Length: 270
Image (cartoon, rainbow, N blue to C red; front, side, top):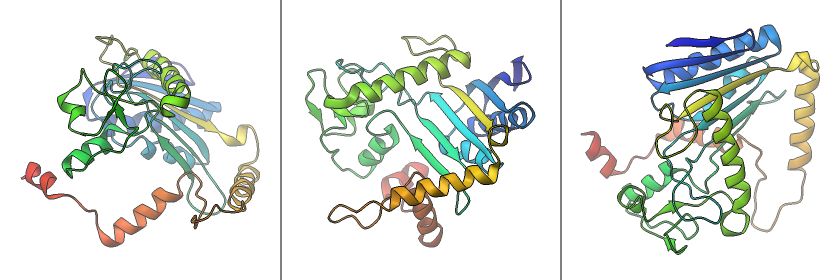
């Protein structure tokens, strides 16, 4: 890995093809280091391999009493623009984590498509149909076969978050993430042949104590969580979740019971 541009508050790293998870971890560690010293640290990363789950990185800043934010213009160009039908943008995930007084840090980790490409591939591996609203064909009709994601790249696209009615919101945010993550990281924004291959990552770490005492901030987060969860529930709803709740529950369940992997995936590994 090579730092090609740096100031006290930011850096741009060329990973030179390094394993994405290793390079991304190093980038977030550098952002945290700079943020502790200078209130905010921002690190751009390009030319790295698949970085895995974006939510793994901002939570490391939260564990240090900071706010962590990660933007990625990557994951393969799968999303059609609002009003369009052909693939133009990646899912462009955003991940944000903040520390709290009681419990694990809050964590939002989401793509700006209605569904991540990995979940479409999981449907294909399990030979299940996709529900309506995940993908469309060039005429805007729903695509139900998940294998179309890989087999029909020119006649299928994943919908932006919000679908036909409110997809301008998911598309708009995904577009701006592409502009920030692609542009600042040097990876290049989405186009036919991105400047340096796209898949640029921007890591941010914000020092909370430069704005407010950490304990006071964490207490405010508890007030927020308690207030939201105090809402009356709709019929059939057992719990109101805040960002990170479901992931924590799933982690606990899988640590206790293991992770189900379908036979077709085992066959590919063998």
